[in-house]
Length: 101
Image 1 (cartoon, rainbow, N blue to C red):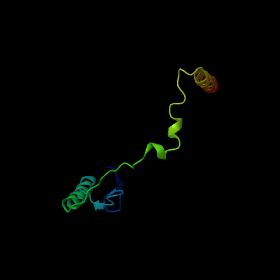
Image 2: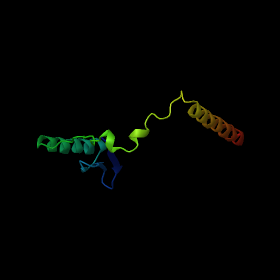
Image 3: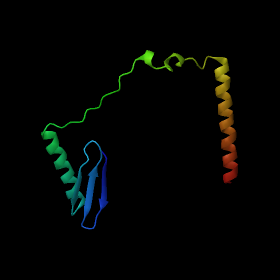
Image 4: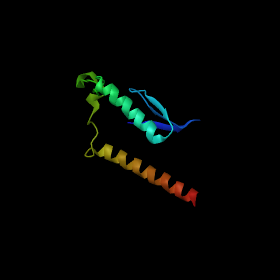
């Protein structure tokens, strides 16, 4: 969980983001973090929970699915294309090195 901790005029504020959206101000960072933890614990004890759900997909729903695997390293044209990309990257890297010297 990410918690933003920042100074305030009176101490420190610790703030969580969605879905909790909790902010606690206290004199010290440790006290602010304890306050955030306490509020999350309170909500969990009241039945709150975060559930991660994967979006359901079906292979036939994805129009790109039929293209998957159409290029393989055993395909001579594709292998030559990949080598051209590597060659181009080597040339650009060499130019970058020469420019930095």
